[in-house]
Length: 489
Image: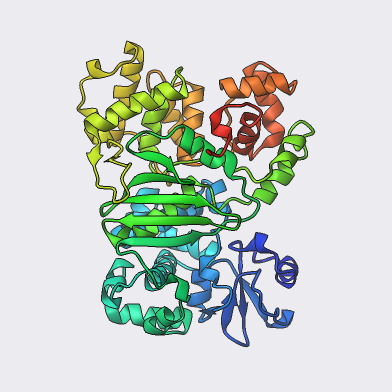
């Protein structure tokens, strides 16, 4: 979008928050870059230039605005609605792959050469993977400076910097403030900090309807791993350097996030995965406007706009739970999962009590005795085949997965039909166009709304909803009285 100058100028002059994260406004006279909705007086159009990423702004010598804090804007929605090289690379960079494995590791995961990945990112984003990772490190450093009382040296290494000097130089360059000055500017209300706990605000594009989002997560919560408590969804997180516990509370203009991490280096990964689970980088206006063109969906959208697709923080975990949920009730699926957690999960300590384990890894589940599973023999075969494939890496489920290729690999497994594959594609892989025509809830909604009753006819009718059929599923599910559609009391 940053190449459409006239449209960008209009967005800046109207302070349209819908475009935050889509592009950034760099002011050539002040050498400051802002989000489109910056509350400051807009600069003259001739002094504006538009760039596709914060990293591109920083690389061009611009520093972040101190009023609108563009580094905190929601991510571009296009990275979650596309499955090409650039989108997959951006999801991996947000997950900290460059910091952990370097550019060669990023390229290896994508199946391309480092040079080709660099070239593609530069062409579309104006910055290579190292610059994009550096921008993320700067944002992580700012979060730690403002939300913890940690010494600057610990913050530097937790944020991923190789030296304190690089940390100091980067913070000064990006924010035009020394780290100590940045800490001095934080609001007084954030001074009382609980040791080991990070309190953050996760921004999103309005509107956001929390009912089905948190309702789904709470209704399907696995005891010991997830819970709904005091208006917050809480769960344990398996992270690259350790584990964490997160509490997420819906607010009118943000999601309140309370994080406890065993290793602070996992902060950017934890934030990225929580944002992905809650689908916070979506563009609800674009989705809802498209779905409203169908007269059947329009009343559902108008009644409760801004529905998101509830996703996951662990793709392999969700695939296992999808198999456990085949042809059984939500309560039965939770019971099966809870038994696995107690028997094979990794114990963790929750300072607030309630959460006890990480969900078992595929490696831990691959060694269990199938006879201990209280399910039909055919589903035991499906379960053991899946966890073996995940443990042996013959099937990879991740934010970098190729959606179509992964679908084909899953369909080749015994017991995997269209429903299981598409629910994994929708909630684990993040495909915004995944559709579930055979789902019981969808069939009930189709009957109530006079939509076609057969799978083939309903799929043909849903072609008009593309590329947002996963969001149409949320609106169709909402016609039912199932607990997944309601925010817990």
